[in-house]
Image (cartoon, rainbow, N blue to C red; front, side, top):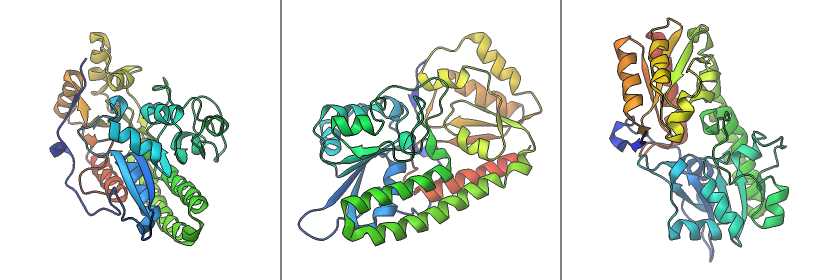
Amino acid sequence: MIRRLLPLAVLPVAALALAGCAAPAPSGDSELVIVATTSVYGDLAAGVAGDRARVVSIIDSAAQDPHSYELTARDRLELETADLVVSNGGGYDPWAQQVLDSADAAGPSIVAVDALGLSPEGDHDEAAGIGEADGDAQESAGHDDAGHDHVEGFNEHVWYDPSLMSRLVGLIADELARIDPAGSADYAANASALEGELDGLAARATALVPLADGRGVVVTEPAPLRLLELAGLADLTPAGFSEAIEEGGDIAPALLQDVLTTLAEPEVALVAVNVQTGGAETDRVETAARAEGVPVLDIGETLPEGMGYLAWMGSVIDDLDAALGAR
């Protein structure tokens, strides 16, 4: 199966962003530069940094697939010279860690999966995944496995859980305060405000548990499952389907038929479709879902144009609420 990238136009209409992918540079002879692997992390980092840093997001378009992205020479230079790198980890953006592992990088990096203690390769405390980007520091910080590809059975899409992002912005603030002590009060205040908003999003998601009413969801890819599970939905996708779609593998006809049969079950509350990537199989699933009267929830992996993380995730929760109420 060939994964195809769908145009940005299929994503939700943009709303006002909390913060753009780049914050204005601070005054003075030098600027603090934060490089994020995707616009999600760029937006959150910019919200913490305020006007004290310039934030660069390498993946900043819905037409780019983070799983298979090929770095440009400029991307590589940005990663190597950044004062701080923020990445996802867990096999999602291994190209970033590969650069940091092979370069004399300028500053530390935060790998979200490791920093949040979620590494599929072993337990880490909350400080893991934060360290200097040289060999010894990376190894002690749990970075030695961060460059591996997707880990079977592990959902690396951690940004779909706003409560995890609430913890992450605190870690970003702590690291920025270490790099730039003069801005520590600003970073702490910005992070605190963001944490309140993010915790509010998580609360909105968990408030949907009664509406989910013990039902489940079929997903074309595992990206949104952390959010859907917060809302009380079980993953009813036949084993192997969503991971095969994500990895661009072939789908056996019997497995596809199993998915289509599952859609007719009354406990299926909705189908979640990744609109940034797709193929013939996902088209068939979406068509079949609509024919069965099953609501379809469109999701993506990067921010829609002009939209910040808070507005985007809020819109996804709104759509989820409407979909659960429609069936």
